[in-house]
Length: 224
Ligand SMILES: NC(=O)c1ccc[n+]([C@@H]2O[C@H](COP(=O)([O-])OP(=O)(O)OC[C@H]3O[C@@H](n4cnc5c(N)ncnc54)[C@H](OP(=O)(O)O)[C@@H]3O)[C@@H](O)[C@H]2O)c1
Image 1: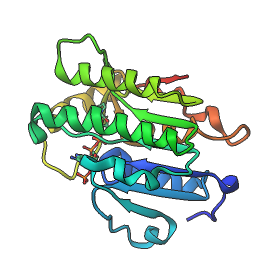
Image 2 (image 1 turned 90 degrees about the vertical axis):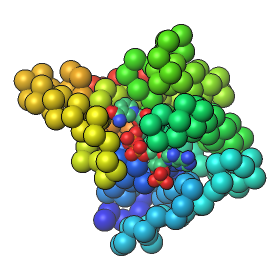
Image 3 (image 1 turned 90 degrees about the horizontal axis):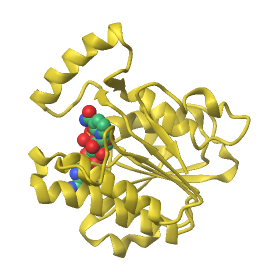
């Protein structure tokens, strides 16, 4: 693990226990663009050696307003939060992927956060007739309306990862797209490692290798 750097800067991560979030955390701890990294989640994570390098805030997402302190004083917020309709039902999916994210963004802004980095999805569109894409479009609009100095939205294609949780349909799609990616890299899919690298690259200070991954193929970054 690299020594703490980051010029005293602080960030928080939502969704650090997920497939992208875990890789993002590894990247943050390896590159050390932030002196302070806080994981905000619904449970405390066992991180082995890395545990000493991060702070953890356990929050009740249904009462996020009571956890404003967790969002206080961060320069950057990363959001890899999300669930699925299969897991949480349609209402639960909307609650997590839109409402929790939008509330977290509001609290972050109120706490002084200048740059919010949101992992959305390819095809996000608030006008879509598909629930998933509509909710992703809606949450993008809500986060952009919060008024951060900078807001980066990543719209990755299908994530390629070794998912810990069983999602049979996603596994089949990943096998197919993984094979396609050998011919057309990242046309329809993107490794989570590339998404995580792009998330970190977009918040680096000038001279820290910022442009290396911000335009990673299949990631779809938009900056504002
Ligand atoms: N799968 C794809 O191909 C794909 C493609 C493009 C974009 N995306 C989007 O990218 C984002 C990250 O995807 P991923 O696959 O890396 O995520 P993931 O592995 O499903 O992890 C999701 C994270 O959200 C947290 N979470 C889920 N439900 C929650 C709840 N009710 N309350 C609090 N926290 C909750 C999880 O915490 P716990 O560990 O506590 O459950 C976990 O940290 C999602 O928004 C997803 O929609 C996915």
